[in-house]
Image (tube, rainbow, N blue to C red; front, side, top):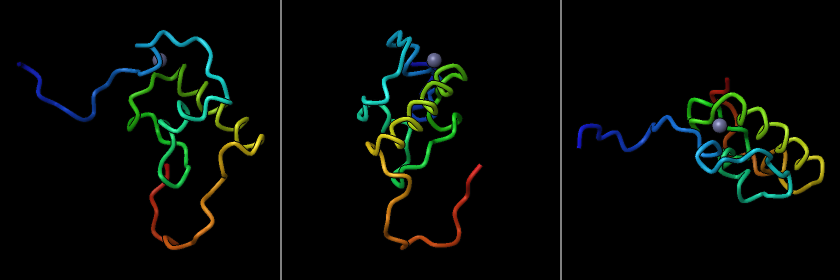
Length: 85
Ligand SMILES: [Zn+2]
């Protein structure tokens, strides 16, 4: 019980599962890297490695083009202050 950091684990989920290809149709898996407003989560939050983050980003963009994932959520409740990288 040395390290008790529950969040901010820095391992890559995809590396752990030895994923070599991320399918844009696999929305469930893509949602892991999306915020609640369907923005792509930055790497420092998901813990993904660069390689997989790139794959996820590409897959998400393809998925958006195929209308599997919305570009943004329609309701504009949270207009204004949002921090994006
Ligand atoms: Zn990885």
